[in-house]
Length: 590
Image (cartoon, rainbow, N blue to C red; front, side, top):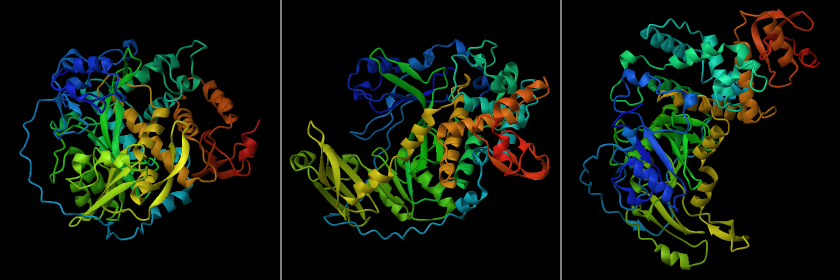
């Protein structure tokens, strides 16, 4: 992919001296910048992302070493995205936009008192989650809440349509697509330098589960034509138009089955760069991550409720006097309130928080708490950070805005922290154990209530990222949007596992076992059995006794039990054999 107007954003950790330079200079400066802790470069699709040329592969995935950016991107100009003084700047590769005149804000009135919130108590009941618990769904059943029959058929139809537009009679079926998904999931915990090694006959690499499910050339053909939108009906103003229908479907399914909770987190995630590897190693040993920025709203445990790929201000226009980040928080809240206008509590970090955002959320009936940059406190007259640092650890100062009922607190811990809330105040002040001194001895320090709640409930996006990074889908093509399939697949598996932890408290499995079960069932249940008759016997012999991921499920049509041969209405989901509950254990033991 090459375009002179591709978007690229260098995340926090980039020195302010890198304004108005080339991307190549940004990467070079990162190599020489010893103070950079975190280097992230966010890439957005080209202006003409709706064009047919963006469907073409840009090279052989297995032959490329490292994540290479085209020359047109490396030599494009960089301008700062943020325009506020002192803000941790993101650098955005796109034409500079004239700054609009600043809107004159009303004068704030700050008072030294605790906040008096007027929100209703949380009384949210979740009948949908109780229904899911009663169904006792297997890992595959939970995963298919998101990749349901409608979504599978949609991908099949769009892929066949796209192949037909290229004069190729693909004839993809839902069964074959599930085999492809199974291989993608399996690549998260079993990966080879080249994906074709799954099908090699060499004893050190051959993987019979993959090789018996689908032929190599058939997989490559399907994967190269995988498509998620009709090219004749693309919104040219949307750089993510080629994946927009899939994003809409997954957001709907994620929200529909999300646990109804009071506490949610909002933040940034990254969908890795579409190249062979999503990072570039610097000579200093540090790496620069390349990928697309995703705005994500999650539960406190890390269930992804809503997501939206970032296009800076090219597609999402800031509104209500907020910046882009604040506008995305409002979009997430609007999505949450589609399930009911309940007093949700949203947590986010200082790149999102402002007094204006807190005021808007309060008017919408939504509670919010977040750390805040000093310049966004709207001149709240708190003690100077230098003065606060001279006081004992745990000291704090706070003020409340009289008209908006928003509190800003400055707390001295290992550093000075500013935090803002429209719902939680100072009282009750608790004690927190904090390490101090070279010996890291634990000492008790005072901690305001809103700090304690923030530390307990924030971080859901980080937990989601951590889960998805453990067994991330490794197979990806060279189309710019191919990595989104892996990201969405990982997100769906993370969400299904989160539901499993809620619904199956007595028989929980870890994330790896959960993903292995889904991959094995998809590959074994949807394998092409038209060739060698011994294939099905070999699969049955090897998987029947492996003691991994066998679940008994109900079936509408009665079949004969594979052990006692009498009629039964239950079966093993993995073996696809009818088995009584009383015969289940004996059937799976040698």
